[in-house]
Amino acid sequence: MDKKPVPFSELKNIILKNINKNITKGKPERGFSRFEFRTENVDPLMWLKVQPNREKIYFEPRGRGEPLVAAAGCSYQITPDSGEDLTSYFKRLNDNLSDGIRFYGGVSFCKDIPAGSEWEPFGNFKFILPRFEYIKRDNRAYFAINILNSELIGDEVNRVINEVKSITLSVPENYEKAGKCSFIKYTPDKEGWIATTSSYLEKIKRGEIEKIVAARRMELSNSGNVDPFKVVSDLKRSGDFAAHFLLTFNGEDFFAGSTPERLFYRDGELLTTESVAGTTKRGSDEAKDKLYGDQLLDSKKDKLEHDFVTNDIVNKIDPVCEPVAISERVLLKLSNLQHLYRRISGKLKKGITDGEILDKLFPTPAVSGLPLKKCLEILQKEEQFSRGWYAGIVGFAGKDISDYYVGIRSILINSEKIYVYSGAGIVKGSDPEREWEEIDLKIKKYKTILKYEN
Image (cartoon, rainbow, N blue to C red):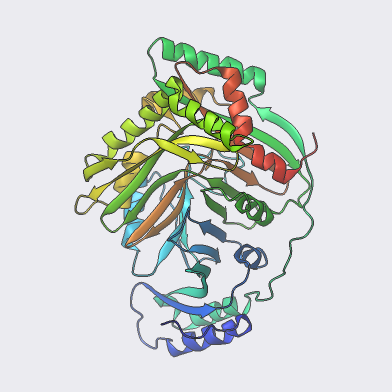
């Protein structure tokens, strides 16, 4: 049974007492110590906003079950060694996992982030163990601190104590008035989009590829006052069946989004993933909504796109899972969109790690295309901007449970500019004009939230 909640104002003293009790006089053990306390409810995004730390992460999984976490500061980080691949990196990450410890972060869609790009502060992949976590679990609030055991000795303790003393526990009730931004351009513009997607359709017609996912970036100027925490708060109000996230590692560049697409969830040996593809709008009333949904379910083009994604995922996880179960095709309904959806699950074979699963699944044809290698080569050559962490991976790695989402329906905010990203699957039967309109639907929430001047 949980103890009585610790008042938010008393958290610092409680944490400091626990640190002092655990100071090590001799050589510390390898690994981490974690202290967690039940506390009072506050707005987790608002709490995160006012913290002095450079590293800030908000992660709210889709649906019920896993807790939402607002995390500040960094106890330990795992950044890639020069030339390290994803599998090797996740092996090192896996070696650092222990009970109750979760590393949060992500992976870029691009293999290499170009020097000088807006994505440079994020790197190719990065996961951190936060110093502080504010957690909402089963309608209760908790506060935790993660400490390397090597920090519980000598001068290192003083550094941790100073970090604890710097926590801001006074949480404002309301956000400040939103800053303004103005439209700069689309990349590609509509003419370029039609030309590029038409060339993709020619490649499909010639049998070079089966499907490819084209992306578009909307670029806005930023006065420096657009609040990324408020953007995520507004995204949450849509009530979508989506995971909400925000990450910054320097306190200046923020990657955020509201993604409906889970890459995979691992609970012990149980692996759950899904295929999401095909798009239509929601109806203004129940009858129209059903009409649009039924049309999507009957659409030969959209079912083809969805089958590409489903079959690719099943083929990829079959070597590591037994057996694989696939649900019926149904509609995934969001606030202004509907998608085709299937749930895929299976029992992992013994010894399979997150890195091996990611190596199989990422990137999915839902964000790249088929065949994968050929489509990635085309996208690298044809796309006029770096996707960075858009269409990459965001989530957490844990010893028993891991949860990763595809970073779509996402936005990058810095002091000068805002970039809004989205994409559309191009298959036989696609119409470039309609795909442009589909992306407009996908970024409609951001247009409403940002209220930019055109």
